[in-house]
Image 1 (cartoon, rainbow, N blue to C red):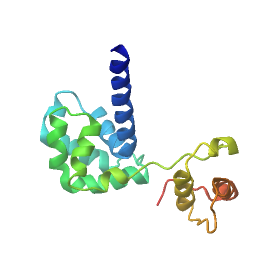
Image 2: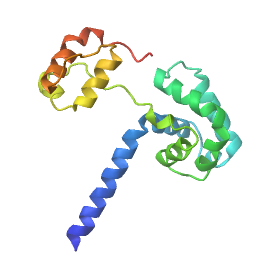
Image 3: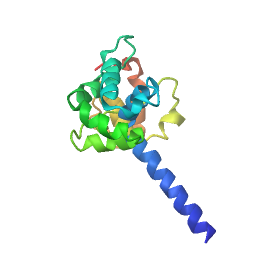
Image 4: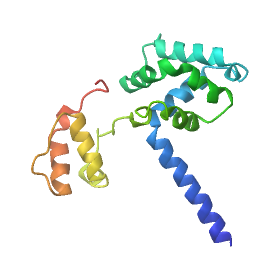
Length: 166
Protein backbone atom coordinates (compact mmCIF):
# COMPACT_ATOMS: atom_id res chain seq x y z
CA UNK A 1 0.00 0.00 0.00
CA UNK A 2 2.87 2.35 0.82
CA UNK A 3 4.37 1.65 -2.58
CA UNK A 4 1.21 2.82 -4.32
CA UNK A 5 1.10 6.01 -2.23
CA UNK A 6 4.76 6.79 -2.93
CA UNK A 7 4.29 6.01 -6.63
CA UNK A 8 1.25 8.33 -6.83
CA UNK A 9 3.17 11.12 -5.10
CA UNK A 10 6.11 10.75 -7.51
CA UNK A 11 3.76 10.70 -10.47
CA UNK A 12 2.07 13.90 -9.30
CA UNK A 13 5.45 15.59 -8.76
CA UNK A 14 6.64 14.56 -12.24
CA UNK A 15 3.44 15.91 -13.79
CA UNK A 16 3.90 19.28 -12.08
CA UNK A 17 7.56 19.41 -13.12
CA UNK A 18 6.72 18.68 -16.74
CA UNK A 19 3.92 21.25 -16.76
CA UNK A 20 6.21 23.90 -15.28
CA UNK A 21 8.68 23.22 -18.08
CA UNK A 22 5.88 23.70 -20.58
CA UNK A 23 5.11 27.29 -19.51
CA UNK A 24 8.54 28.15 -18.16
CA UNK A 25 8.77 31.75 -19.38
CA UNK A 26 5.21 32.63 -18.34
CA UNK A 27 5.79 31.12 -14.89
CA UNK A 28 8.99 33.14 -14.50
CA UNK A 29 7.20 36.37 -15.46
CA UNK A 30 4.34 35.65 -13.03
CA UNK A 31 6.80 34.81 -10.24
CA UNK A 32 8.74 38.02 -10.91
CA UNK A 33 5.55 40.11 -10.83
CA UNK A 34 4.46 38.39 -7.61
CA UNK A 35 7.89 39.10 -6.06
CA UNK A 36 7.48 42.84 -6.66
CA UNK A 37 4.18 42.97 -4.76
CA UNK A 38 3.23 42.80 -1.11
CA UNK A 39 0.94 39.99 0.01
CA UNK A 40 -1.92 42.46 0.57
CA UNK A 41 -1.44 44.10 -2.85
CA UNK A 42 -1.46 40.70 -4.56
CA UNK A 43 -5.14 40.34 -3.62
CA UNK A 44 -6.27 43.55 -5.40
CA UNK A 45 -6.86 43.35 -9.13
CA UNK A 46 -6.02 47.00 -10.01
CA UNK A 47 -2.71 46.73 -8.18
CA UNK A 48 -1.92 43.45 -9.93
CA UNK A 49 -2.63 45.05 -13.30
CA UNK A 50 -0.37 48.01 -12.51
CA UNK A 51 2.39 45.67 -11.27
CA UNK A 52 2.22 43.74 -14.54
CA UNK A 53 2.36 47.04 -16.41
CA UNK A 54 5.41 48.20 -14.45
CA UNK A 55 7.17 44.89 -14.93
CA UNK A 56 6.50 44.89 -18.64
CA UNK A 57 7.41 48.57 -19.02
CA UNK A 58 10.94 47.30 -18.53
CA UNK A 59 12.24 50.28 -16.61
CA UNK A 60 15.41 48.42 -15.66
CA UNK A 61 15.82 47.02 -19.20
CA UNK A 62 16.54 43.60 -17.76
CA UNK A 63 13.88 41.58 -19.60
CA UNK A 64 14.96 39.01 -22.14
CA UNK A 65 13.33 38.84 -25.55
CA UNK A 66 11.18 35.92 -24.45
CA UNK A 67 9.95 37.73 -21.35
CA UNK A 68 9.07 40.72 -23.55
CA UNK A 69 7.12 38.37 -25.79
CA UNK A 70 5.10 37.10 -22.81
CA UNK A 71 4.44 40.71 -21.80
CA UNK A 72 3.22 41.37 -25.35
CA UNK A 73 0.76 38.48 -25.01
CA UNK A 74 -0.34 39.37 -21.47
CA UNK A 75 -0.81 43.13 -21.92
CA UNK A 76 -4.24 42.96 -23.65
CA UNK A 77 -5.57 40.44 -21.12
CA UNK A 78 -4.26 41.94 -17.87
CA UNK A 79 -7.69 41.77 -16.28
CA UNK A 80 -7.99 38.05 -17.12
CA UNK A 81 -4.57 37.52 -15.57
CA UNK A 82 -5.39 39.54 -12.46
CA UNK A 83 -8.47 37.47 -11.57
CA UNK A 84 -6.79 34.12 -10.83
CA UNK A 85 -3.68 35.93 -9.60
CA UNK A 86 -5.77 37.74 -6.96
CA UNK A 87 -7.20 34.43 -5.74
CA UNK A 88 -3.70 33.26 -4.87
CA UNK A 89 -3.35 30.66 -7.62
CA UNK A 90 0.14 29.42 -8.33
CA UNK A 91 1.95 30.96 -11.29
CA UNK A 92 1.69 27.73 -13.24
CA UNK A 93 -2.08 27.56 -12.80
CA UNK A 94 -2.42 31.24 -13.80
CA UNK A 95 -0.43 30.54 -16.96
CA UNK A 96 -2.49 27.45 -17.76
CA UNK A 97 -5.69 29.43 -17.33
CA UNK A 98 -4.65 32.35 -19.55
CA UNK A 99 -3.41 29.89 -22.16
CA UNK A 100 -7.06 29.21 -22.88
CA UNK A 101 -7.44 32.77 -24.21
CA UNK A 102 -4.07 32.80 -26.00
CA UNK A 103 -2.57 29.35 -26.69
CA UNK A 104 0.81 30.82 -27.68
CA UNK A 105 1.64 31.85 -24.11
CA UNK A 106 2.88 28.43 -23.04
CA UNK A 107 4.78 27.82 -26.27
CA UNK A 108 7.40 30.45 -25.44
CA UNK A 109 10.42 28.66 -24.01
CA UNK A 110 13.89 29.67 -22.89
CA UNK A 111 16.67 28.59 -25.26
CA UNK A 112 18.60 25.45 -24.45
CA UNK A 113 21.98 26.35 -22.95
CA UNK A 114 24.65 24.93 -25.21
CA UNK A 115 27.79 26.71 -24.06
CA UNK A 116 30.43 24.45 -22.58
CA UNK A 117 28.51 21.32 -23.56
CA UNK A 118 30.65 18.38 -24.55
CA UNK A 119 29.68 15.62 -26.92
CA UNK A 120 28.67 13.37 -24.04
CA UNK A 121 26.29 16.09 -22.78
CA UNK A 122 24.82 16.64 -26.24
CA UNK A 123 24.24 12.92 -26.61
CA UNK A 124 21.87 13.11 -23.63
CA UNK A 125 19.59 15.53 -25.49
CA UNK A 126 16.77 14.32 -27.67
CA UNK A 127 16.85 14.80 -31.44
CA UNK A 128 13.94 17.22 -31.10
CA UNK A 129 16.05 19.40 -28.77
CA UNK A 130 19.03 19.21 -31.11
CA UNK A 131 16.80 20.32 -33.99
CA UNK A 132 15.55 23.20 -31.84
CA UNK A 133 19.13 24.32 -31.13
CA UNK A 134 19.91 24.24 -34.84
CA UNK A 135 16.76 26.17 -35.75
CA UNK A 136 17.58 28.85 -33.15
CA UNK A 137 20.93 29.21 -34.89
CA UNK A 138 19.24 29.42 -38.28
CA UNK A 139 20.82 26.20 -39.51
CA UNK A 140 19.09 23.33 -41.24
CA UNK A 141 20.50 19.84 -41.10
CA UNK A 142 19.55 18.43 -44.47
CA UNK A 143 20.31 14.78 -44.84
CA UNK A 144 20.79 14.23 -41.11
CA UNK A 145 19.25 10.92 -40.14
CA UNK A 146 21.23 9.75 -37.15
CA UNK A 147 21.47 11.46 -33.79
CA UNK A 148 25.25 11.55 -34.13
CA UNK A 149 24.90 13.66 -37.30
CA UNK A 150 22.75 16.20 -35.43
CA UNK A 151 25.30 16.31 -32.59
CA UNK A 152 28.13 16.93 -35.06
CA UNK A 153 26.14 19.73 -36.74
CA UNK A 154 25.44 21.37 -33.35
CA UNK A 155 29.14 21.23 -32.53
CA UNK A 156 30.11 22.59 -35.95
CA UNK A 157 27.74 25.55 -35.59
CA UNK A 158 28.76 26.43 -32.03
CA UNK A 159 30.10 29.77 -33.28
CA UNK A 160 26.56 30.72 -34.38
CA UNK A 161 25.20 30.42 -30.85
CA UNK A 162 24.02 33.98 -30.36
CA UNK A 163 22.17 36.04 -27.86
CA UNK A 164 18.62 35.70 -26.60
CA UNK A 165 17.26 38.16 -29.17
CA UNK A 166 14.87 37.12 -31.91
